[in-house]
Image (tube, rainbow, N blue to C red; front, side):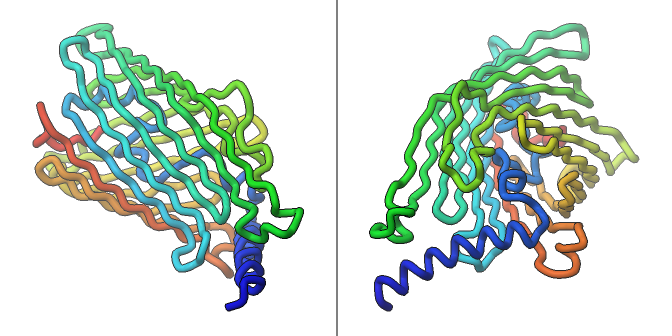
Length: 310
């Protein structure tokens, strides 16, 4: 293949991806908000590190989220986070790493966090957390055609990041508020995504765990996100857990996305799968913006063999 044909193919791929956003009925800036995932009810720590105190075991968690499978340059995200409890002070510390890619754009973040809880009464606790790290953004326009002035200059920016979280929790429910990505200046202003990935994002979360019978528990949960200039989004989910080993749930997002979720918890290991699809008329009648999401976790230390449902 000639070099000019190869460059034209890359440019076409980027344009095609942007057209797909339009077909699904969402503006690019609204669609590509801060990193999100459908299995938040099983691992909320990347959104609010104070949540890490709800588990007395240590853990390592990984997640892969891939959209439009089979299309070159389609959105793909990777997340890894580890948590180590500090039982002597009712605290926890850990690391969160995620990588988000679409076409020629890529955002990578690395954050360390510390969380500390205090007991309010016999059944309730209040936890606070702080996280700090770096956020890197790149847009490799030159790979499209380095000889074209329009695509000559790449964008490469790195900025510090700081975040805060607070959570009130008991053995059967929690309520949380967090700002995990708090930046003084914008990042990625040259992005075709209009820098919406790099604004301050605010999250409100809540969940409770209730018994249906001796073997089945039900967990409704919600995650509400807001950023200036981006429509507020709410995730609402409900999950049934059978004997603490198998979870089956459904999630609805107010930007007209729905997901089916399945999880297995056995001896400290957690495996989850989510299938997300659009519910708008454009999705159901034509191109379906399907997303596959796989998660894997391992818990160790105190209480690791017990199922973690909340």
